[in-house]
Length: 516
Image (cartoon, rainbow, N blue to C red; front, side, top):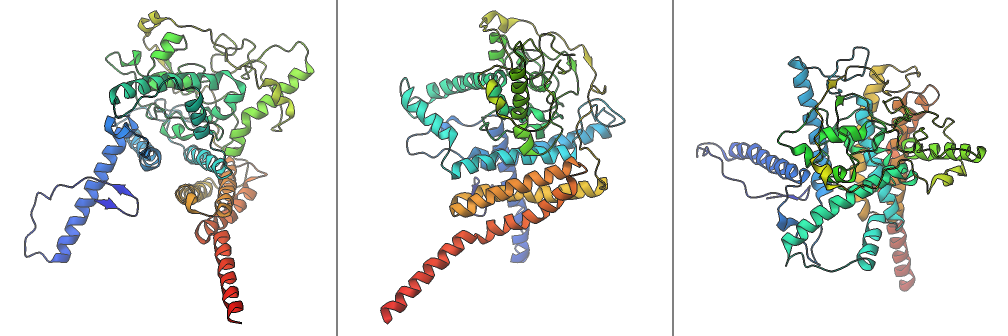
């Protein structure tokens, strides 16, 4: 059974257990069938999406030949399931709250402890920052720059050792790619933390101060989205039993990765890489401390994507001024290991961090080939068996840093801000999905204009969420004006319409000249 509007195909549905009486009118029978069919379709879709999110995919679906299309897992299942997971996590939190469990983390005047609650501004920001990455990558594609495909093709053509037929050796290819890609992910992720130039894009993902499913959506524009374990972005799950913490990347391990300075636990699916390469750090104290240091203090995706470039400029300016400037890792400590060797106060607060405004000077180039985090090159299989120490304390209710929730210096009612951010943010998010689905069928000029206007609208609504006194009202007006322009371009397609009109006019003129 196929839903033509969505392009999603589901399997055959079993008949209803309760047969319909022949006395029931046909119209009523039809109404009786529709909810059951819809429910079965939704259930089948959610079950398939669940399996995709946890990599429980039949090998036959991944055994592709030369003429096979790559399954559209991201658009068809990934993005919708992101929001399903967010909804489920939110519901579980509310059930826990109703049952008397601690929920709320360290945020707010009355810190509750336990997992942090969802915050509206943070949720909208995570959604639009993730969309900003996808729309930004679309912009690169429109101008002919597809970094992922270009890079993969170059390595395939110049660095390929041998060629294996996936259909002939499915198990061998599957296992080689399973371990090979996960190992490659580890080193790519580690490099993003070690090198300043690669941290520019990846730092956006670490800018979220709440550790929940929504944080998994945050991605930088210049960091192409890699496949990764999404479900581990949750504070609801404690340590896994049966020794699974020794093998798989888990919420416990990844929480340490998101706690500043966060230069540890780089694994994708298998934590064995961190353990054998010496970058594994266990969580022994539960804290509600996540994000960057210094924190950018903005929801604006443009500023978030440029934040580390600004910091590199400031550090470069200092390097130019001080001949005896010590090598820094960009987080402020002079050790060069991301703060893991005593460069701060234990909460990611480094010493001597760069200060300055948000301007970008050309001094950033001085740090392009410099590291911000140094790890000793270690490969010791004995570390795989090193015991994980037990949990010592849970201090999630202690306020170790104030989370950014907007400056709140503008004279806007909090309820009006929440209503406006929710409504406009939802329209921007829906418009982004529509743009991703329709862009390849649009005229290049229409698609390019839509991308630019969408990015401006996304930036405007999140600058409004910042509630800065001098920019909030202007950002509200900008977002209100840009949205109709965006949807007008997306629906009307003026460049395509103008081209069609010109062609039709030329054809009419030719017919007229011929008749004359």
